[in-house]
Image (cartoon, rainbow, N blue to C red):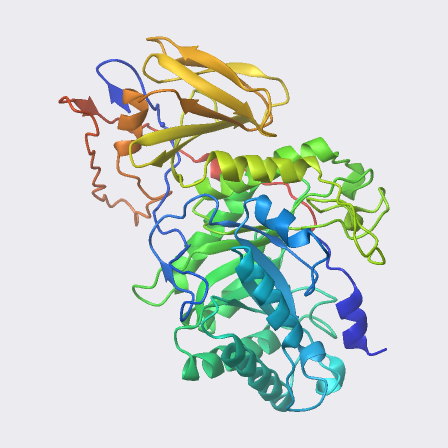
Length: 516
């Protein structure tokens, strides 16, 4: 068995507005830049495209898979979850067994299934091939050219089917880049492949580098900066990272901020390059890193919080790792990242265990379908998350807290009733808001609120123009920040906005995360 085959067979480690009536937002509102990744695409279009339209739920959510031929009932279960994307390895050594001869039949079958079930694909161009460079990751001119020829052949074969191409998988760590990670070798390969694809197929979408681990850990930012300095952002439409951590999902905001600033430093003039959470999950395992345990219930809560928080941080596409558990051992984290349980591959008609995380994904997707993230509302505590979504003048709220103890929060709303739903689609009830607002008990699990009739104050909140997450102001200079309000109400309304006086951002606090 070649080294390349051994690496392939190893499963990757985974992954505030003031009104005359009341105070809306006191100052720690999070804004959405509006530079979401949105694919204006239908299956069978000429190519996938990025533009600045905000992504609608559930168009920015997906899962990682490890199959080309699904088991009976599997695609129906995938579609019913509401996700819109899959991410899968397009493995070099399995599709070029003889030099210069390419066989993509297995991936044709997979794409046929995806199209039938309203799913899009990210295909990862990855790993070595024993036919070249002794099976190691391509590191010679000959190996790089062979990899590029294979990549162009794949793009040619699948063009017009909405595939997004990802340049390798976790090249900054072993075992994925072999014999040892080398950023310059990766840069040479990525440049060769990007130029080769865009020379013939300039509209094809390439992303990278699928960086493993927290951006703020040693060596990670340096790897990215080397890639950006070398000009890889010229060919990439988005930057993909895998921000695994043992801490709660919300701690990722610091990673995203650092990466946004780094991209802005090196992006070609006028080019907007979003960040993609290309792979990230939590295992429902009895044993995990540093003695931590994540039970299935916590996994489900974290999924909803991760995806919602990503939207609030301008992340237009989130891929959960994993679709299915990779093994039967409860004490092995690598076996337990899935939304559904493990099924023996020898079973011809498997019975699927639907885990709470699957229900959490399905509830989020169905409840917020067609809605866009608008802004985060401040309710007085930085660890309380109240996210406002809208679809035109219709509004909904997703809310939770990162504290362990439930507590009350007051959301500024007009008087009226709200239907509520928990993160698993259960415990439906009605809450009534008064002239003082809506009193809501926040827990560590997301809950969803829908006004039973038009709520004027929430509509006004949604009508405020959304601003960037941060503005860069050199030295002692000042900048003008335009702020527009569209009045969605049939009567005139007067409002004023007050910015807080803050000396620092919560994002400046340390972010303890996992070694990855």
